[in-house]
Length: 263
Image 1 (cartoon, rainbow, N blue to C red):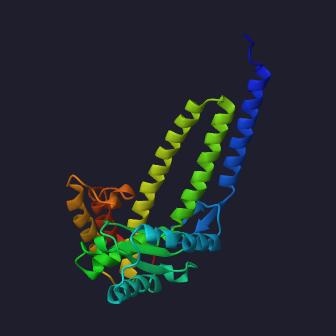
Image 2 (cartoon, rainbow, N blue to C red; image 1 turned 90 degrees about the horizontal axis):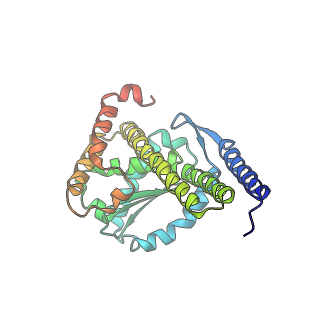
Image 3 (cartoon, rainbow, N blue to C red; image 1 turned 180 degrees about the vertical axis):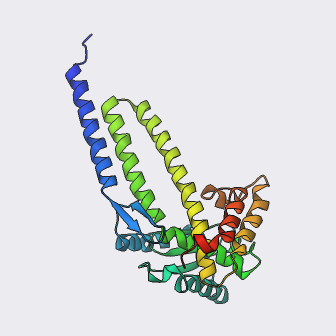
């Protein structure tokens, strides 16, 4: 039985280290300061590329959710609230191409694509009782765009994929790569939950700046909480933390808005 060459193993390790070093260098050299969130972020695409990505992805997403809701009055109401939030807050000076779309779907959900495409389903709207609650949902999604959360996740994915590839090359082991992939998913999940907290916090500020009652965001969470207690949770919970973990944080932001929110 032939023994594997130790030099071959060393070569794999060196190649793996080179791949890992390149992935880390690419990620940490992509730092950009974001005035909205007041921190340096790592993003690998430009704002124009984010806008193009959102516009390119929107048609398929709309089809997936049953198409646009064909009620011009409802769509106009959402446009009014959405652009009111954008034009009367810190969002007004940002470069994103905003569009607010109502989706004809019973699924309880709302989300945003990179670049300014914001969506809310008729299922979600049917559970909201006030204009302020609608504004709370839209403000939260607007912040995902302003904070470039999508672009950050893309950069994080590129980094973790590079590191997973490095592990696979260095170890020549599929199981080691699978373990690395599982760890990276846990890391990215934590980033996602941080993103949601940030969107709630800055979303409260946007609501106040635009003249909406930020308690509307609390009302949304209380409504969603009633769904979380049932056996079948809405799709909203696949991408957002459970509301009971967010209500107190939102209320704290409202209570301290004079210091938390930019003037």
